[in-house]
Structures are given as C-alpha cells and as structure tokens.
Amino acid sequence: MKKIGIFYNFQSHKTKQQVKKIIKLLDEKSVEEVDVNTATHKDFEKFENYIFAVPTWFDGELPYYWDEFLPTIEEDNLKGKKFALFGGGDQVRYPDNFVDGLGIMAEFIEQRGGEIVGYTSVEGYSFDYSRAQRGDQFVGLAIDIENQAALTDQRIEKWVADVKKAFMGK
Image (cartoon, rainbow, N blue to C red; front, side, top):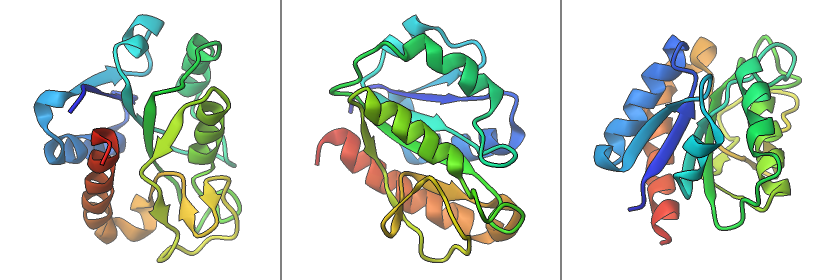
C-alpha cells in the first residue's frame, strides 16, 4: 500500500485518540502523521492517499487550522489522489449542521479533482441537516463522541476496512 498521510491537529486530544485507533488498524508502517497546524505544501505533496481529520466547529465551520492550511493547496490539481475524511460533530446540540466540516472539505477536494473514499451510512444518527450527507451516506466517517461514544470503535473499524480497500484500488 502507498504511504498514507494522516493530517490532523496534534493538539486535539479526542482526535488524537481516534487517529491512534485508525493507525493501529492500518499498516502502521504505511502511515505518516502530519500536524495540519504546521503542514506545508511540501508535506502535502509526499502522498497520493490522505486521511483528513476534520471536526466541525460551532455552527458548521471548519476549524481555523484547516482554514489556514487549505490556501496552501487550493491551486493544486488533486486528480489521482484519494482522500478519506473523518470528523466529530454533535448531532444533539447542532442537528442543523452535523459534521458540516466533512462536507465543506469534500467539496474543496472534489472541486480540485480529488476522489473521496470511505463513505459511511447515515443510519443510526439523528440530525436535521448535514453538508456531509449525500443521499443515505456521509462523505466520510461521522463521529459523535458526545452522544454515541459507545459506537465509535465499531464505526472506525468498519470505515478503516473500507478505506484500506479504496486506497489499495480494490
């Protein structure tokens, strides 16, 4: 399997816990962690397969560190590159924009020719609207630690299995 760049905020405790689970389920030798807070274009260019941890902040916004990183790659042609997205949201407190960050990121990637992999079912969630929803699926793995923590490990395991297949081209 080609090297996978997993981009996330190293300062986020919850995200870091999820990343560690994901890396353990992947071939650890094939994954390189990149702190999105300090990532450069050169860091980004090293990979063809990416995992982006994209939590949703406030009323459906990207965290500031993604807003600061994305201009670094906004002129890039992402054709031939695969992206798996995961991120946290709160479907109870923010039912009108649950995991919108995933949808915002997917739109950014697709507008530049990148391929999104690792779609997951919306079944089992309770929300009103999400920019991350396409039909009966999310454009990545939606994690709700606040309300469905007991389902997180199982959801991560299934998602990682699907992502591995997609990254391997199967």
